[in-house]
Length: 295
Image (cartoon, rainbow, N blue to C red; front, side):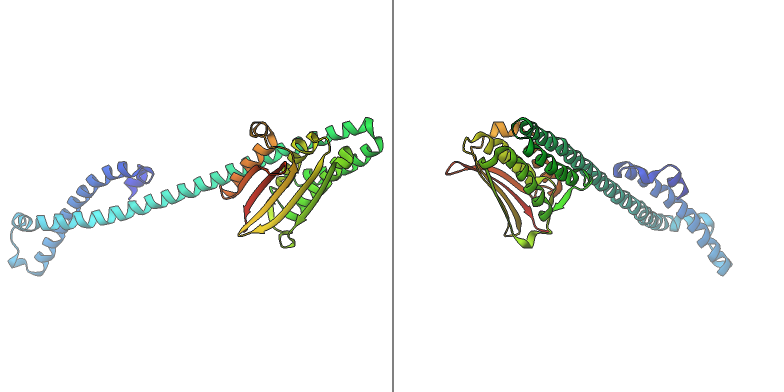
């Protein structure tokens, strides 16, 4: 098939390929006819030279059968050859598209994750700024906590997932940092199923909900309140819930970077299988929930 390779038939789409294959089958069928007729005639002439009819008579008697046989054989061969290469090309294109989709997803996840570090850093620095004047001793403690938090965040910059245990350790340090500012106004509790300690979840996922609970809950309550974090198994999901005092406002939440970012990352990482929601509960509480499929 040098002609087909030279003219890059393997790269044509199916309709264009078919337009070239049909005439090629007919031409090659004619070539098969000529070669077969001559070969058969010579073979008969060699075996029984006295009983061989004239060439044109022999040709008229056999051309139709040999032409149909040639077209049939060439059609099978050409179609099999080109359809094989067409299928291989489509498989390679599908593989390449899948690889590009994965690269794009990873790049988008990395970009979204990278946005969280400065977002988290600015929030923490604002907290320390408030403490410097009010309570210098607490400000120094806050700087120590922030150093630990940044060490965890920045030195794992290329990691998209983390264990539940490590994420909760980060959240605990964050609450300790915020408690220096809010003092008795902030109470918190963290509960987790021990079976999930090594389960992988999105980095900063619980942290984002914790920040949201402080910003839209504790900070707006004169008497503060309790932020409760729970990580448990529900059916085949990891159920992450954060409860805080306050009232959920959809318009206000939609303006925040953290929740938008978290929603996008969940959709990308878990391909639409993760669930996220925020609701107002009876008793003046807000409940934020993430459901992640257990692998």
